[in-house]
Image 1 (tube, rainbow, N blue to C red):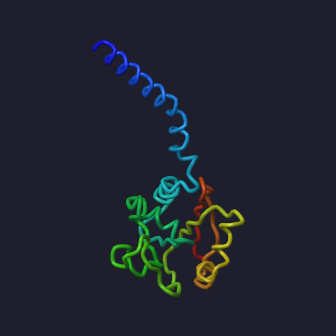
Image 2: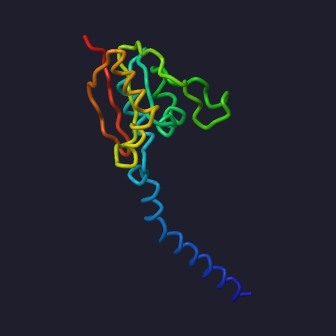
Amino acid sequence: MMRGRVRGVLLLAGVAAIAAAQLPYQAGIRGADSRPIDLRAAAGALGARARPGDDVLFLSDRMRLAALTYPEDFAAVHDVMLALPAARSATLTGTEHRTVPPLRAPRVWLLVRRMTDADAAAARTPAGRAKYAALRRDGYRFAAEWPLNGAVLQEYTRRA
């Protein structure tokens, strides 16, 4: 009987030691810096700067996940490209309009992945080029940008 208890205690101590050894590793992979794109930081940056009536464009569907994950930070802005929300389109991120509608807001926010070589390809797709062209077409100029962990938030304002 005593042997069984000793084995149980030793087994429990061994499991606890293994779990404790994994804690630093788990903390490292769960931190914001370990993510390729920190959606929380992207959403927070926009939420802190956006005003009611602003528009937002996402260069890729992946960046729209920030709005779906943290909707409170996107409450003031209008996603001009969203034709059908995720639930109605039976997709993860919704579906976009085929062409960029006219932009009329005082400011437009563009949320893009950090422009590494692979990510810069999104800006060269027909959809990416159309979004940048629409900003020029409707009289917007680049005003500022905020580099984030894996993303960039850009602000465009109407030309005076």
